[in-house]
Image 1 (cartoon, one colour):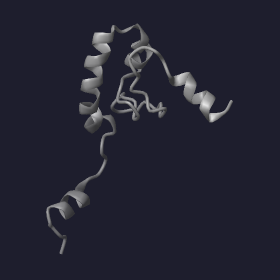
Image 2 (cartoon, helix red, strand yellow; image 1 turned 60 degrees about the vertical axis):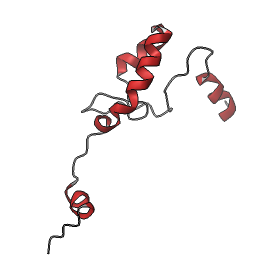
Image 3 (cartoon, one colour; image 1 turned 45 degrees about the horizontal axis):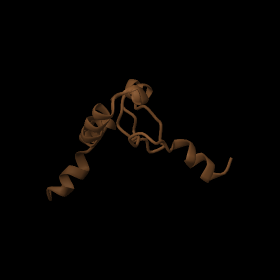
Length: 86
């Protein structure tokens, strides 16, 4: 299957899916790291009403902060605030 054929599989006539073709559910947040949907939202996407999908599309970007929990941010935060360890 060519790349063009693979891309065609993801196209639909209904409201566009937020899928980024990076389908990996993060074990802590339980959100897809590509589109920020839960596994259930991904599974049920085509059964949702157009109105519900539109509202979910507005909400998804807000989930980006929790989709991939940050393990360590100490050094980056300190540097951004101009704090040094010296």
